[in-house]
Length: 262
Image 1: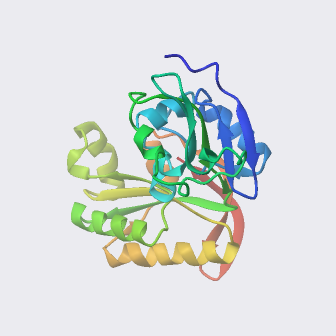
Image 2: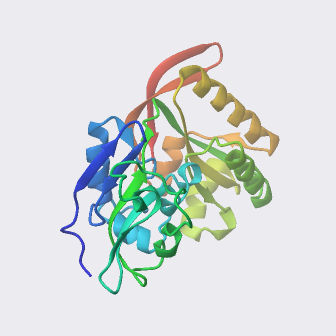
């Protein structure tokens, strides 16, 4: 069922931090429209596919870039409009109340019907509209990289990093799983060590500065060594886009600079 012509933004509620869209809208289109409002969906879409539709992501219970911080796509869904197999059109959550037109909440009127349709691939009905959470755009962000002596140390760091809420998105590499061609590239740079490359962000300058220091302390707790992320990404062939203003923190000084986003 091709829903790509149903790709409009229907409503934006700043006070409720929500946007109402049709399922055919693509991730790139959504980011463009939300940027006009100065907000973000938090999630960036499935890896490498800004042309993917959000409706497909809902039906397939899609994981997404930035899910470590913002959760899965379906965890950010507030309301659905669904056409049932018998032709009935239903609204879920707060919109099940016919007197409510633009008050977007998932948990309120009776049982949570939203969960029946999420990840169901259209088996129980066709989703024709849905409401998604929005978030303020973080003012400060950085991509960081650390190497660890073994996989156990790397995983303990990653678990603690996520537990404290410091990670926005993350990519981990276990050295022993790499093909020989990449081992020959990385070994002279970092040794036979496992890597954690991740993004972190904050809304406040002082919080961001303290957060980066806390991350560095946490990494050292598990034998982590900070790495020059730009060099590592280039060695692995990962594009790095220098488009995010951040704070460059050095001993005794703080300066505004640019950091890459993977």
